[in-house]
Image 1 (cartoon, helix red, strand yellow):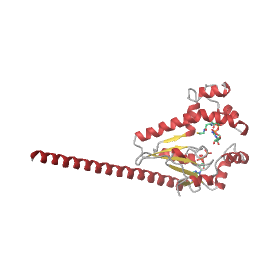
Image 2 (cartoon, helix red, strand yellow):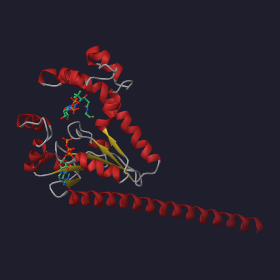
Image 3 (cartoon, helix red, strand yellow):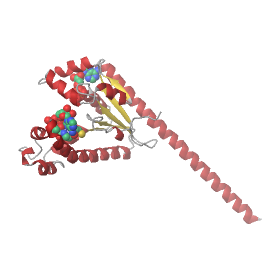
Image 4 (cartoon, protein in one colour):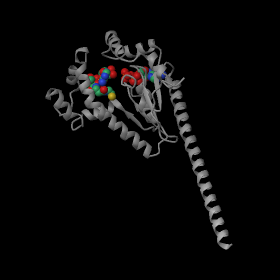
Length: 250
Ligand SMILES: CC(C)(COP(=O)(O)OP(=O)(O)OC[C@H]1O[C@@H](n2cnc3c(N)ncnc32)[C@H](O)[C@@H]1O)[C@@H](O)C(=O)NCCC(=O)NCCS
Ligand SMILES: Nc1ncnc2c1ncn2[C@@H]1O[C@H](COP(=O)(O)OP(=O)(O)OP(=O)(O)O)[C@@H](O)[C@H]1O
């Protein structure tokens, strides 16, 4: 049966694009921090949006035009609280679509530049940290999708330990996210964050090692293949030159 998992079209040896996601409190940010400490190039979708909303950011003027000066803060950047009030909630779904139509192409352009730069530098892998990866069907931009996941009870305990969090807020956020079980099913790999930090970090290190080895092996195979083709071309050329020389002597 053909795989239902939508993934990027990738040539052997190219930088492996790993998508990283996970539901609230599952430990995605912790895994993301470890990956950055391991010097893996990482593109953080939330950080991109923050940059686009900062004073002078690319999204500021188009958002002002769409929603008015009420979405600007004193510094001339986007006031996330004010924007949130306009676009969050069932009744505002059209406005959220309008916001996404402005912001998502800018996020996508930034992500494309990041992948292109990683490929140009010859990186073995790079990571796209996208909280809403499945919600926004972004798995098609990845070669491998990794979901960070822990048992629901552990997730609940972690989230409710946060200041300002209430059981009602937690339930409302969960209801808007693709369920963890579905994420796990759609993933290529699951990082179990229900273990000790050390054990989870070990899983992340193994995964990185595996990705690096896969691309290194592909590149080695490509190199051997190129050498073989070059060798055949040289041999054919030599044989042709020999035949021509022999004929001209006759
Ligand atoms: C709506 C905004 C202003 C709210 O900002 P704020 O700082 O108050 O909250 P934060 O960004 O932490 O998001 C709060 C919650 O809303 C959810 N959320 C954010 N954007 C979206 C979206 N486009 N669709 C559905 N849920 C969303 C998040 O998953 C999170 O659970 C902001 O999230 C935004 O501009 N979103 C649109 C851009 C976007 O899609 N970002 C996601 C990364 S690509
Ligand atoms: N094995 C583990 N792996 C990852 N995080 C763990 C683990 N054990 C405990 N934790 C803790 O769980 C919390 C997870 O929070 P983190 O901010 O990483 O989650 P998140 O999924 O990014 O959440 P959000 O989507 O709300 O930002 C952290 O405080 C982290 O220290």
